[in-house]
Image 1 (cartoon, rainbow, N blue to C red):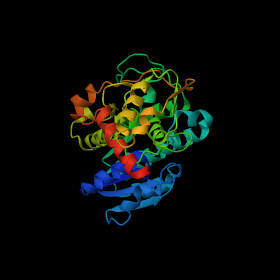
Image 2: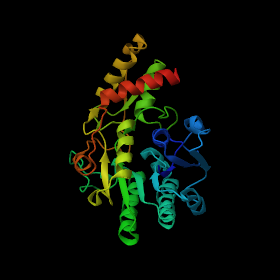
Image 3: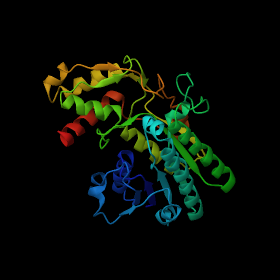
Image 4: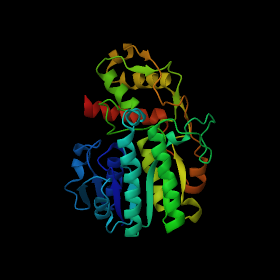
Amino acid sequence: MSKLLITGGAGFIGSNLIEYFLNKKHSIVCLDNFSTGYRHNIEPFLNNPDFTLIEGDIRDLETCKKAVEGADYVLHQAALGSVPRSINDPITSNDVNVSGFLNMLVAARDAGVKRFVYAASSSTYGDSEALPKVEDKIGKPLSPYAITKYVNELYADVFSKTYGMETIGLRYFNVFGRRQNPNGAYAAVIPKFVMQFMQHESPVINGDGQYSRDFTYIDNVIQMNELAMTTKSPEAINTVYNTAYGDRTTLKELVTYLKEFLSEYDPEIANVEVVYGPNRAGDIPHSLASIEKAKIKLDYNPKFSIREGLKEAVSWYWSNLK
């Protein structure tokens, strides 16, 4: 079995990756500074002899070098997410997402890791109106966050060409599922709406509800990380892939699905009204991924549609947050 470094391992996606790969008997090192991750996400793993926690910051190169010692693969999830957060504080977003990313690339290069798989972002498509989104056709970024994630791709490409590193970027599209935080100013829309419905509060949709997203269940993202880490095809590495389901859902449709599934637990939720507010700065109107490249090069076959994923996610939230 391999030794994996998962940065941002106490976060939503990182902790799910840790759980999956521990169950596959890999040895896991988690690097996290707990700025957006949570200790309760990794508590179940702390007594596992194959799990090591390093509390530290990717903005410190020596910490990155310590974390990557002996690692076969790096799954780099650590970042400051959220478009609004980056608009409010572009400097910190850049420090973490660009300088921290570069530190991890340098540390991984010096340690001789086999492959560096990293979380890229659909925000890279920027103002491109083309649908579906195809990897080699992007627009201009619409937020500081989007800039940082595009810079990650540029650095990874340069390190592949200059130092012979194997890198793969995964452009995540609106990932959701178990352990995603419903609280705080920068909470993602699905857990935030679920929590509000559970409390019989009216969720606020930014805009008229017709904006659409390619919502992607966490298990599809885990599958993509495993495929990116294990592929033996030379044609499949040193590139980026959309990581999505390949279908889009409007915010109005999302609310309808959430009401349907939550009402199975609490019939009163069906009567909770939705409020419409102004559009949010930096938001793109529509997002839909082409997943053909991942299907062809990585044999990607997402198992969970939006409805199937929401049903699983709602069940988890009801059991864990009620």
